[in-house]
Length: 177
Length: 177
Length: 177
Image 1 (tube, helix red, strand yellow):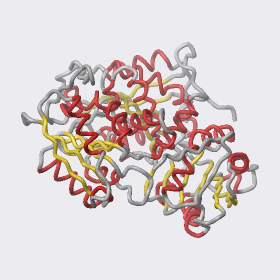
Image 2 (image 1 turned 90 degrees about the horizontal axis):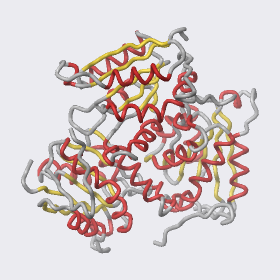
Image 3 (image 1 turned 45 degrees about the vertical axis):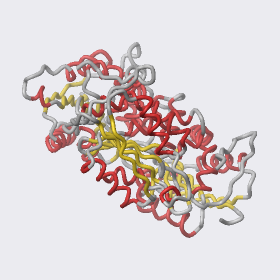
Image 4 (image 1 turned 180 degrees about the horizontal axis):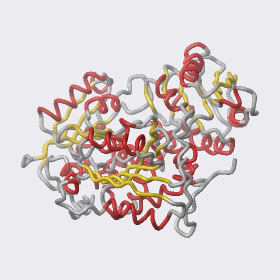
């Protein structure tokens, strides 16, 4: 466990990676975490194309080299040919956490019926938790709000950094154990 | 994109394929689509036995040869030895869409507790969306009603035919953007 | 089908298997089944370490040698390194039933936000249904209550023992066929 948590923020988007499109997903994740986390942390941002090998390499480097306890991706979760973020995530994780995708689809479904098209998942690689979010900035906030209460304890269980949150924003749940 | 959408309707049932049992699932899907779709379409019906290689071959032919933008199966989703439709679907799809199965089980669970026994899924093969439905005609309608609002946009995203629906029946959701 | 149903109850816990910790999960499952089942049955209990090959061997022996129609595990479903019960279950099952995990996470989520960290699943091996439960005794009861109504019919479909329940506790649902 390091004193300062490192958190990877990965925007997966062909257009953003070529500079044709302003990355709005990465900054939305950064703003959310800044508002919510009270423990010290450092963002490790990446903007990459929708290429499965590149996504896998990026996730591996953020977990194994950069020492990120948490890696959050945005984009590449839909049904289109270039959407391969969940496949890349599954390929680099030792175990998957289907409950994250189930809950995020459930909350998004209250807003739009196309939420069932998002294939986002989450998983564990070593001491890192990887969580996929959809690409739309609106969906990023609603999805993070749904899963954030469980993230600090999850990272405790895998030996990552100790995260604390502003209870006015998110009550991080840690069962007495 | 073809002008006329082609939609595969696959009844997977040992008894129906031998003529021992009238196929009620395929006609129920056909009737639902006839009531809901306002864009021109053509059904490509099949009635086959619960044999995984045969189901896979049928799905591949409907997607790759017949050019179906949508393939809907009924039957073979339960826990019994001969129920292998989800495995055949997963085997021929490049990516799976777990949100379809989650939502269909959720709506069926409001009716019967045994809805959790249905292993139905959905996935993408090329420009085709494949969706599994349970075998019971009653469950077919409730499952299609749950997922239909997201199907036209899904098929847009994979480069299939442009489907429109009667909004009095189903409001097909297409996000702006 | 045997006259007496055999039900495997598997506690997966490093500490319980070394005797450092009293097994409370196995007895909680036994007490629940004793209260609910009205058909004759016999428990086949096991307490084992969180080792994937050992869990797989134990599940295989309970299904194939001991003839258990139902095998319920407790423990090893979380994100930690030693939590491998779902992987062992998937490895020995011919088919998985994702609806079990979805429903159990949904009911647990009403109690604690960390329910999404439980990776529990269920699956079929031959004539046996294997169901994973979390390790916490409180969660065992709420999860079993959620899925029990569907279990007797599931076991009918795979040719296992015929289970009946006390309707004051659980109404086992068997669709008219």
